[in-house]
Length: 114
Length: 113
Image (cartoon, rainbow over the protein chains, first blue to last red):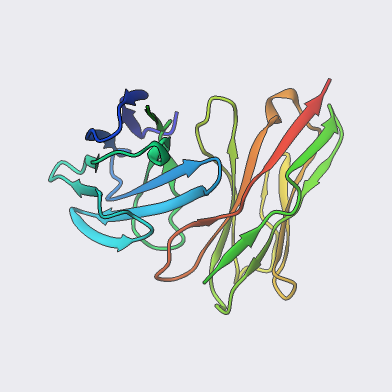
């Protein structure tokens, strides 16, 4: 168990809808990262927060947004969903935001858009 | 942009034997970190081992060791005494200052009893 908690485990929704994925980082970790894993794109970095502030952005669509709250949990909001958004969404956390801090991943949220 | 390449989509190994998974990367940085992550059927990403580019000594974690060749930009993972529980997808990953963790495409490892 990595100590990173993601909810829900599975999510099935229709195109055009909006969903929220939630992540609780390991105790003491200040950085939260979101990754998308799809069959054709592999693991893609979406966004990073460090102690409540956005630190880095990757290939995150404008329809997607995220935030990190004062208690350090994070939420990833996906709106106007399309079939291609179906993927496994991972949250990871690390103590710091530096390159040497290993990322510890949650079990992911499997999103299916029908 | 940094890229990480795993040229072996699938590998298989007999239980108790040794297997090596390959990884190459492209970078102009001199300091960076390299990682191997394991993703079993449970789909969780588990850190196996990490290596700092400035450290010449190859990292080792129990049955897992790496062969880090900085000049060749190569970072292979050796699994000794393979066990059934080692069956998983293995991802090589790279991270340099100011950049995010970048993953390779993965290698599926099958362990035959």
